Length: 263
Image (tube, rainbow, N blue to C red; front, side, top):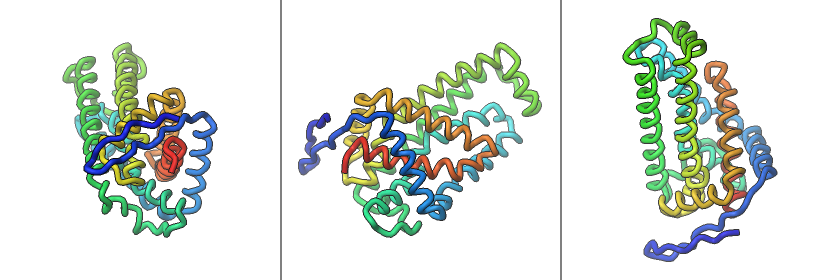
């Protein structure tokens, strides 16, 4: 185990211990995530339905406007803001773990705690990353297609899947998207649940998350791949599957945090 050095915040706070984790911990987190979802289905769906509804609205808008090339970046970008959007799920898992009431009215109780400012700060940071991703995605499209506007979704899909510039758009877009996702994973995988769990400042939470990633790069990269794969599966039927996938991943991320940073 690695103990991070203490930092003066007006009073001394020891940085949390960061554990080494393995494949079994990922499996454990997913099982506990499913268990929490089954134990709190109404509450999880109440929060989880936000994602598919927003996705459908954004996709509908994009399909009827000149921002059709941004439909996929918009959908993929949910993963960039997901860690903050899952704050309510972390709180419910925390309360269930401690034997407290898991009524959905308590889902956002963490926003009334001293660390709420840190949560909002990370939420704004992730929103900025999401906006930057959309700008970069649009720039990649312009670099390959110029100011050409697709006549229809079918025509655009055919061009992307059957032409060299379309293949380049897929390859470059996915590589850049991976870089953005890697940044968000390293910064938020531990920091957001930690701010729900403990009275720490934003910098301490982010530094602990980065330390966890440095100690467990392969395992957390595998976790990122699991999250991405499940989000893709949940997005295929018009985002409806996210109503189940997002709550399970949110609860599972809490339990993964517990394996990385012990209570």
